[in-house]
Image (cartoon, rainbow, N blue to C red; front, side, top):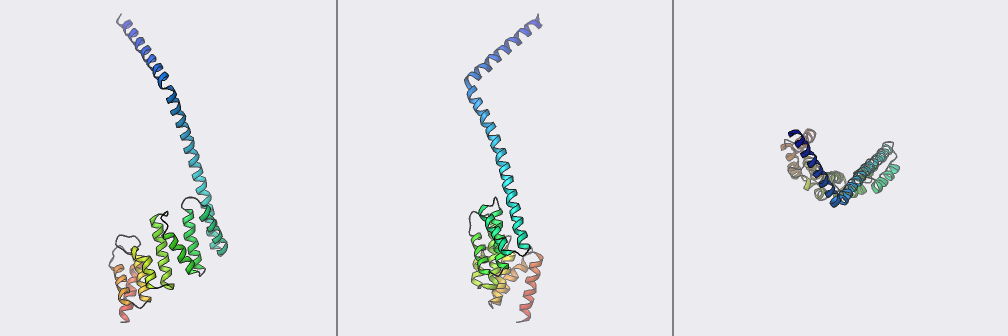
Length: 220
């Protein structure tokens, strides 16, 4: 008897739940169906975007490698044209990489002024990530050591030569070389000494700075 009662109660509960489900569906079924459709559409869109992203990045990567090959094969004009195209039509980080490599190629061709201008444009572009902008600024500073004044080098490098900046040692070297070239040995010594005193300075940079300090000391 007790077993029959339990079965009856279960049947009643099942029926009630069934009625509740029907009521919920009648009330919210349209909304639930729309949500399901939106989830499906969102999933399809995500898959399509991922495919487009991977395909675009892969194509730009291939173009970048092809341009690098042209530069390596001593075809600078063709390489520059390829980099210009990638800068205009490339995807992801490749347009900026193309700009950087094109500027380096211009410097290798002897067009230092154009290279400095290109690197400076990159360093001032707020849409580019800061590390890339800093690298461009440093490249401009090194080029200006040979072709510009100390003030021009300082305009590019001084803001990188501060404690905590990952490029500070290289920036200090560029400033020291520019000061030495300008005949200001005191200022050059100050910059090189900062490199030597920085225990986080790359070994090669520290060794060069120490050597230059020794050279200046021996010629006093």
